[in-house]
Image 1 (cartoon, rainbow, N blue to C red):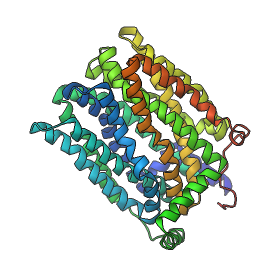
Image 2: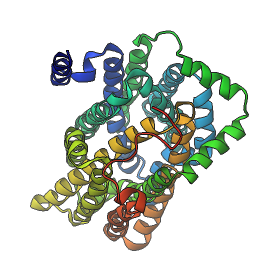
Image 3: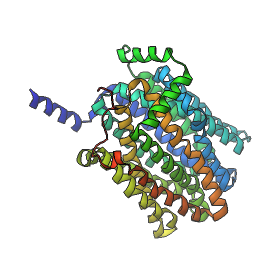
Image 4: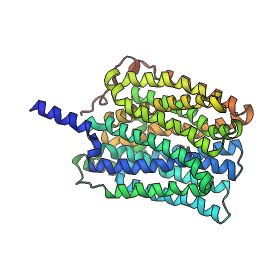
Length: 433
């Protein structure tokens, strides 16, 4: 009987794995299409600011900062509220709000009232919606898959996100040239509507005993107390604490790169919108490869060793990006961007799956929000730092500084609890799985 069961498991993974499950497939489709829209916005919004509104280097960096500033402002209470509220309706509401916000940009452009101020406000409000969506998403996925399927589920979602990056970023440049920078952002608004529709179609069963216990627990405590519990859990745990510090420094540096790269490629390298979109899409290729190999690497090397290898090894390739130029020198960006993106995706899969399996289910929203409060809260600081460095030192020199910081950030994971293990633990001390 065991041999037959093992054969079924092998066949299951060979022919689609989790994609054969209707609920996960709907989540995957919705997030993949939404990812294409987001990828288009990553290129399209800065292009709009640079080419249409003629924004300064610092103003373009401030757009990136605005999108992530909400993590510093509402990141912690969002985690407590996500643990109190049903995840799926909250995610649907966030999708609908984001669709309206991004649709407002082309409408304002059509009637001639679009300003850099509106673009910043949209980035802020859409960023706030993303805080709740991303936190709820971390809580929702474990309700659709088993603990043993978390790595596969995260890998498939990260892989599709990388494919979406390839298509979305390259399509953004082409769409901007074909229909205009502002009109191209309509695709992002529509993608959020598709995501909401897919979430609406997911069939959910009766609440589990674990969900009922979670609801009872959160009603008996205050939001402030729950926030404090999440912070203490992360601060006292050696694994979560190290991963949070590393994530904050890596995000600060890499986001500084993202905040400057559009300005760098357009104004320093002198590329057109289509070429910029195609170059930035190479990061998606690297991310897709990272998602494809993450499972194999973790099975062969272990999760802890794979995380260290990806963080320490791939960051060095980011130092190729400032060498980018026209002609053959464009290969520096292709190689550097692809390898760095592969390392980021491998790390995201490992860290996300570890957190979902390791943390008590009733605290997952707060733990995820506490970690992201620092990790994502560093992003606006990195964008503003990059904008200041780009103004003071020049864009290319600023890229050298921030990508050197990124290359060194992996050393923060060389703590005793991580470097001495093959695999990260499957559960927190005192937690049963």
